[in-house]
Image (cartoon, one colour):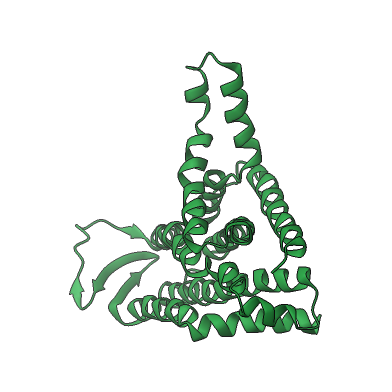
Length: 277
């Protein structure tokens, strides 16, 4: 276990040396500073009385905005931003972890250590996950605390949505690890990982397409892809429901998506363990 944790620690240190970790931390800190110093909310009797952004008044048009509704809206917007932009940045920042590890000289050094290949591969996975998890916890937790402090309203929507975001990244990271060990290419890893998003969106509305098809083979292929690939669109809807505090319609996307990520990670371990370097 100590050796596995050493690989995790080494991956985090490598991320810091390449300024990946610090870049995430810097953007998160800037977001929190904007909320602290640039956004001012005056709450009277549970409603927003006045709002200022960078010292300038925001026109409310005489409309009373319930502070509970405002907080829910901000949390939902932040969750949506992190699910889209945050995941894309996380993929871009960590896509090279496996290809870099497999470079001649570096992989020889790693394999010379008294550590099994599965432990080395999983340590790399956990290290990348830790980099994103630490930054996400810092940003989501910071926004949640600041909103609660400024408004007096403490809602669990954003922390719950954050759990779905990190779960989605963990699933995609398993796929990235497999693609990275097979292709040894950061570019291909990034492209295929990004392609999962529009493909998942298409498969989520596949019924609108398959009704126009006459080929049973094509329909079976599309349905097969839907059942095999992660339900990113479904996870996004689930995250939105949690952020808004709505009853969750279904948790089904979690199960099949986790199976996909775990299968990719397990297959990546097998490939890495059997290859000669």
